[in-house]
Length: 141
Length: 142
Image (tube, rainbow over all chains, first blue to last red; front, side, top):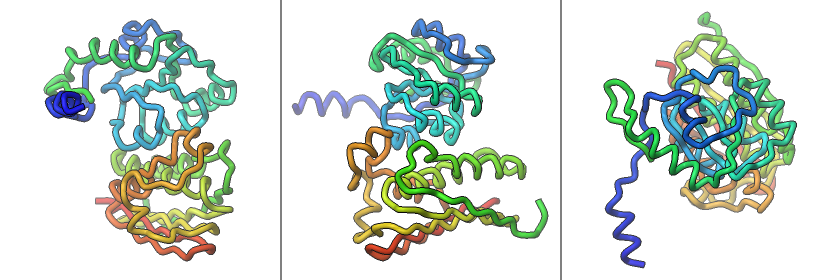
């Protein structure tokens, strides 16, 4: 137990900072299906992964992609409120019609990945960590 | 934006999870149409959304009234509901009385009031048990 605590303490917890990437990069990194996306060249500033929308509202930065297993209308509304770039539903979650309808109406791009939340987030971290935004340090949560 | 105060009220219905967040989305859209700065709009929208979700989760009904002046954006949030018996405790991150249904919606983790405070320049909470809760949250424009 103490090892785990020490391990965690050794890794600084930092917020997701700007990276230079697009929705096409995100899609490619996790092999996601495009459910609705009018522009794959739209910029992405980073990634936030959570099932708890309360945490997203605290941790996400504008332009982040949200990776989540929570497929309901609150996910899309959270994306709108927090100025997120897109939502990726992990674990092959079926997107209910009402959620897709709201996403289109609110112009929130939606992707679906068969990968687990852990694996999707890990692959995105690995892909985007080496792509700091111009003039930025490029950090991730 | 003129010097005149802009006022608009939004009704919120308790337990209506389908429409939860609509009022805050409208508020955000309204502020965007006024040409206010994006970071400011985002702070107001997050605070409004947390307040709206609290009403949907806990209250029977409520009203959010948006006031915009050249100096401030203020949202007056008033609900009819159970009230908050211990406000200092409710302000602690992680303290929650949420039900499993609320958590399934991705909320109810005890982050709402602290996150409202984090995103506002002023927050006043008054509450009467079994009557309701009144929040006034304010963000400075400049």
